[in-house]
Length: 303
Image (cartoon, rainbow, N blue to C red; front, side, top):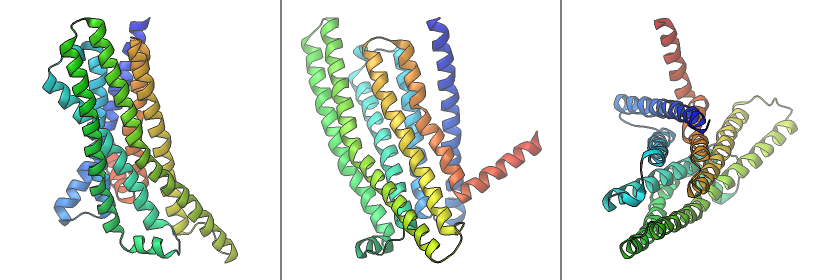
């Protein structure tokens, strides 16, 4: 029975991997075509392009985690390979979260209507703000890599000094626990920034609707639609990222208890974040949505 369920969840993982690569690949393809044709990309298109690339990497990292659980053991891996695996995981997770946060900040500065001088200053210099945050993420990345590398070196030293399976397995479990803690710690800042952007967007929408009622105007104006669209994208990001983070944490718990079935189930839930949220971004972006509908129409004609 367990083998059947693992096969079912494996099929789900494969479907989500294909769907995620198609949705993120579509964003990359459309923006690259525009880049070639127009010789430039708007700020939001640049963010979407980098976000889609990082999420494609994250999808393959989760797939690699599933594959390693079935056929692989980190206790017998080459040290260089292990460093590459850990580093690639940090990079994809870091940039996937930070570019989603940067997108939330972009929507806030572009759509929200606040009259505070500091907000207007940031709004008028939105490209500078986005560039500064993008460069600042490298500081957190370097700190994260340094911290993880320190834990990895400690585990490797223990591995050299202990030859028994129990001691090496226990040492790697400790390394994974420290890595999960570091991931949580370094995710707090971008997640909090995205949360603040979301709350400010809600307040901006409430303020805008209040002014609309005082002016006896309808609620279907373009700025209201822009607020609602940005909020849909942001709230979906929060819910899916929370599911992704909890699934990784739960998968790690079940992995330490050698529960393969629940580990595969958690990984399949984790794939929902980088796969489905990119499809939501396509539907929420006018250019991407129009190109997507054009592709669907031509696929129907071809069938």
